[in-house]
Amino acid sequence: MNYILTNLEESIRDQYLSLAIAKPSEIDMRQIVNNFDIWIEFEEGNSKLVETEKNLFTICLDSRNFLQKQWQDFAHEFGHVMRHVGKQHELREYFSDLQEFKANNFMYHFCVPIFMLIEYNITNCLDIENGAKNR
Image 1 (cartoon, one colour):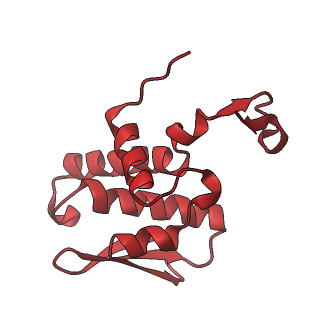
Image 2: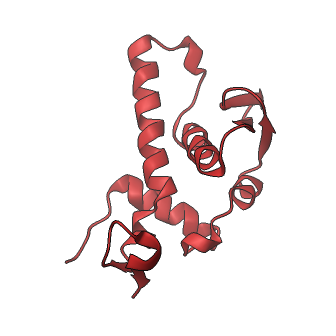
């Protein structure tokens, strides 16, 4: 079967490949932020994106969360940086909701990049560790 990537999936593929990231084991959020001049901080409190200066961002991640949740929060906030402009708190509720939906959609695709996933032959969805073999 030939899978055709969506525009979002192509964009995410291009972002990863521009960082020389082609396999899941190469994904490192610190490398990503370094290449995009974004700061990352771990502190107690809700994860959020802060614009410290014009076009300079800090992603604050809740240090109390497990790594998987921090990764998801990172991808969500990174989606805002990559795909949105302006101050979200000044938007009407429907536009704010739309941006949150889009950031979540970005997060799902960024956390599990389809272009990497299709390289695996998944034989057991209930046991991905042993059921996903590289082709």
